[in-house]
Length: 480
View 1: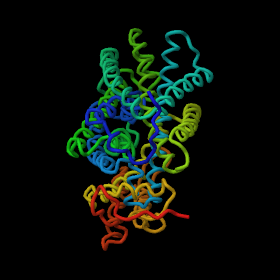
View 2 (view 1 turned 30 degrees about the vertical axis):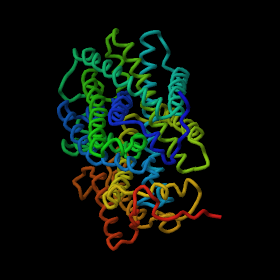
View 3 (view 1 turned 180 degrees about the vertical axis):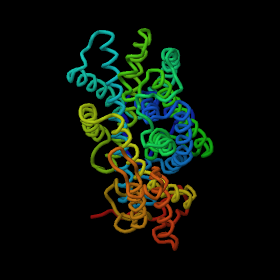
View 4 (view 1 turned 120 degrees about the vertical axis):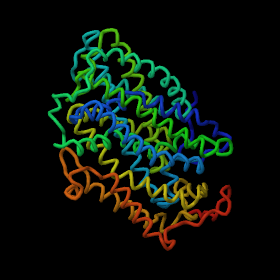
């Protein structure tokens, strides 16, 4: 129960004591929460029937997992988090792009988890003890969930891993009970309250659901996976075992809660809102399990997200300790919860958030994976830490710490994705060339990857390989 002292520095091999089972536990246990469950509600709210909702989530999750899972192998090699590891492609300063993308992803999902968990908790307590659904009640519940989340995030990886192991068992049992609770009123037909297909046609709406509910889940982990695999030693566990564990953890950790969300959306007739109908349709005997799922599950998931946010801010501001950075981002995330509850429509906010972050995050992941393939998993771990030591030099220094080719490729890919995105409030100009179908993640990743390969085809912007993965390839010069 000691507070973790490590930030984004290199983890010594003697401290890398986790294994594949721990990876599966943390990916499964941390995701069994209402913040992930609610994504299963999106396809029904878009006007799809049950089986169309299921297929869209399955397709998006499988595709997203295939793209995201290999990222776990990078931190297995570098012993630091993924945004810092991306310095091998973007430069030791350019890897701030990954830190900012990771910070935004984790910030949004932290706020969403506390927001949904708090709303369900207030509604359940309203039915059980008559708690009024006013601003004070929401404020107190949000504050309690946020405080518990901060405690877990500050203590760090080992506490969060233990929490995930418990949640993997406990939350699975609670969700299994939920199947029986909502089965009496379950239907496979589209919910008429949704008002038909959100985008006017079946396939555009189905693809929107595949991206917003399915693909967005794995993409949320593009900067998070390294937070866990940096504690796994490559000397004791092979890359294939870690890759298989990542696939299994992501598939189970995302499909189990999201498909539960889809099932309960039809069982509770939750078309326009999820939290309220979920509680109203719950039998009395399931209220306490639902309250436990809303509170404990939310703390476990938001704790991991907040932990990742602390690492990303620590990477952006090297002088800040991980604990101090975690407290700072916790304040911002809690503020986002209140803004989300009082100012945003849930469906529009969630859809816009995941589509925008998917569009800008996918090209970063593609470029990082291209670099991993090029270097064959060989990194100079010491040179990756140059920025954190406020030094200069190393094989990842490029131009003043930036790899211009990689940064430009990411920017072009992300901009292309934003031009092709379909949001409730905004339609990108490229949609007229895709038949109105949101292909933003495909275009952003494809364009970013192709531009990066073209700009580095002659070797420009490609670092030299370390002569020995265990030894730094070039001395680091300390800046005056």
